[in-house]
Length: 531
Image (cartoon, rainbow, N blue to C red; front, side, top):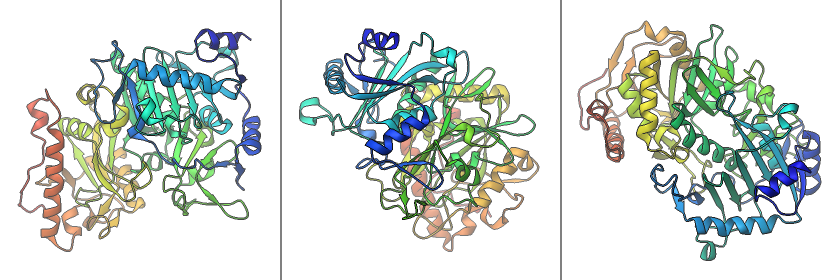
């Protein structure tokens, strides 16, 4: 009753059938009985999210409140909605929830004791509540006594907006109110909106505490050396950080303090398209009872068919961190010694690995170049070049310069090494070249982390001014220099200059950047050989 009163007094609910912190088994049973959930032969709960199988970035809004107005980097993804507009949808949601069964998870975002935030997630669907339970940090029994949330997420997939009435772009709405401390989600069953909304909240709050929030995965070696992997969906963050020789801290969201890094989450949300036991054994093994699988086809015997993309290429699985053998369950690690920026370059001109200076690291961090891969957002059906600031633009709602400044200060202070790794195409652009082999990417990343690339010579690529190693253990020398992999060198140079123009044009948006950073812009038309 205390919890119900707490919710009512917070103006979250007025009268509903509330189910607090149900067990995994109970949530699975409800999903099967009422929501069409199915159990795969590996024990995972499988659901279909219907129309929306990826995030809806055009439907995400920040309430334009006085306390945040001057801080938000307003743009097409950080769209404002008026306080009145939010209140209208909030009241619609409150009325919608009356007398409905609602599933409530209470836990935390942030593994660091100093910065962790208590949150409450209210779901219309049991499977989404299981998702929240597996993705966020579960509380200890004593932490539930007198639990008080600092932020509340309300996810109501069947509560639809009416654009001509509510002023939204579609029936979907994802709205963050920092003054009311509420995330309001409606119209979509895609669970990723829940986790990414809270990531966005942390990305706003933490820089004011001198903590760098990061869209990255993190792992640690036997000697305690921490590596960060930055990249958008589909670039390989989860795959490359899940290394049998290293322990996983987290696969997607972290903060960097004066003491080290900490995971925002208590679970992983991995892509499963073309998943194989050979290439991704840790993820394969993690998909078992308690995991929530989205939009994966099951055969007649209940076996997941991971190479079937009939619903989407953005098939996903959510599972708790404890499903990964050897994972750092406390979610903390030391100061990073190596940073890996991942990009899936569909043009095929960036080197498979290159070493960056601090200034280059800040430049590429602000640029956040990659290619959006099919299925990660609605409407993306083939790789599309994009620049996403801080390798997570839709979620970094302060000015990019703020995050980049924090990153540069930490690289400088701790002498952290930074590498740019292309997991995309080589020998030609998408449709002509081939995707970089995972085993080569793994070998290059391993060499960077272990210090093997500190022992080799480098050449300077003239257009992007990147430092390319002349050799790397277990990697053919011929693929290290991208110009050598194209059959037509003139076609390579033409494509490289097109990409260079894209970098330069994109960087024009950043004001107040030092000359040391600006001069990292690619040199369009550079012709000298890099062989």
